Image 1 (cartoon, rainbow, N blue to C red):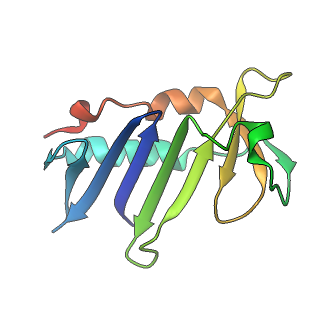
Image 2: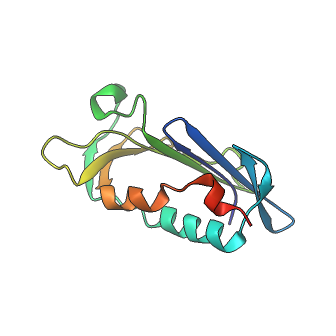
Amino acid sequence: EADKLILCLGDTELELAKKDDKWNVLRPFIDRADDAKVGELLSQLKEFKAEEFVADGVKDLAQYGLDKPGIRFTVATRSNAGGEQVMFGASPADQPGRVYARNTANESVLSVKTELLAKVKVDPASLGA
């Protein structure tokens, strides 16, 4: 079960952490978070599924727009305090409804539907209690 979430949308970084079974916003401001809204956001993040395997062993992230990803998120748990980070880059030229994605735990690049990204573009203030 997640106990920390960092969601970076361009220059905006949202950090949430669970303490005593309650979610709190730590960045860009400090506030109590609405547990139901955070739960919904985590559910949206779980929906990300690869549509297509693109490449393995990728070293040059720039060709996929992953050197400066527009969106990235990290979810940490008690058993994995460092978390797992997923980042999203450019759209393939021939598939505008998809974006390149990469889980930093491996060097594979995948593509996912862009409609899923719209679900995680949240205003940090909307998660307040």
